Length: 243
Ligand SMILES: O=C(O)CCC(=O)C(=O)O
Ligand SMILES: [Fe+2]
Image 1: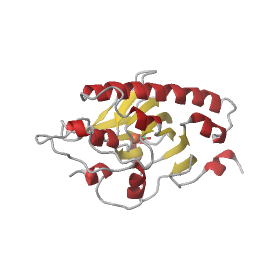
Image 2: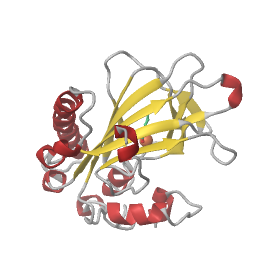
Image 3: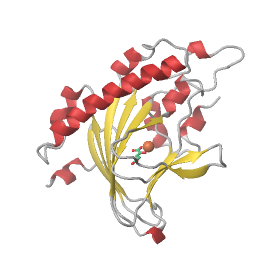
């Protein structure tokens, strides 16, 4: 059995998992992804694919550095909310870090095929590295129009996830995003997803809630998000948490 077949699975709790989304009559998306648990790295790196031979070494280095950067960015974000810079540090220390590699095949522009449909991430924050443009975000200040985010070589993009929206009681908003397809080239991206521990309930920081600013979101955990995914609800997850 080749490596790809070994890792193929749609069990979202598998620490190493490959999934392929093919265009059919229902789904108009085309994407291949690999999800890897990445923290604590020594617990997981041995089970990552070993082909190509430098895969674990290179991606392992990237995972450590991008997580360190995420923690620094989180310090700045919580400070911007008037909270101490170490706020949420211990939850993040015990939390989850997942690396997601995406490959979007080239597709004819007339086919109306997306790489990835509109969604918000469940994370606290996601950091994206991409080979070329293709990412679009929904601009709520402009009639929810889709705006292309230009790719500038070597830059990283930081996306706010659902659980930071909850933690900040809505002061930070998770961003709706999607990926278009490209007629000339296939596109690759690497997402770094930082979250609290699977079972930890995330709720608005008590310091941000008072009479004038009531609690706007229910508490929820990553585990509950995973259950929500299989519930086929017609609302988005973040909408389902709004009080
Ligand atoms: O490929 C991208 O630029 C975005 C990927 C993404 O949104 C995701 O993996 O959640
Ligand atoms: Fe995303």
